[in-house]
Length: 96
Image (tube, rainbow, N blue to C red; front, side, top):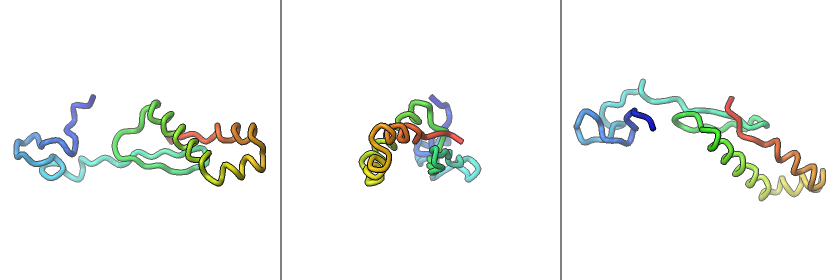
């Protein structure tokens, strides 16, 4: 776990305010982490880069959403179930 003060934590100055409303300067804010999937779909998240477990979870959720979309039906119709599953396995979240 990080020793850094989170933006919603009480300010270490003792004011009782949240850190983000008190002493956090603009230079303390982090740029969002960015990554793309294999098809260059960009995803942004504030804070640290996601862990491998988080990336795997995002990949599974992304693949699940594809399977429940009209795109999946078209993919299966065009390539068949086996080839569609193979194509789907290539849709992965990656850190760039």
